[in-house]
Length: 89
Image (cartoon, rainbow, N blue to C red; front, side):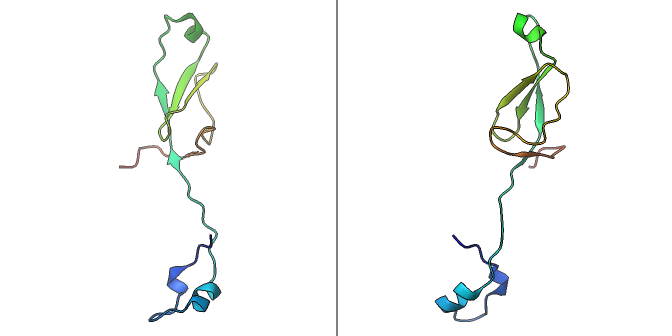
């Protein structure tokens, strides 16, 4: 599949060879998300070992760490870039 810049197409009737000569664009869809804290039940002995849990706002994948902070810039499940401070409405 070729992604083309539609703004660079000629106006009016367009022939296939004109489309083929239109410059392509390198475009990648980027998911943006944020880590949401998960409240851990410390009554569970396994959770006592954990510092914190986080859920991806995009796919819901959960990450549990021994530390109470998370510094993962991307979700390992869906690839979302974790750069949002607030959820997009």
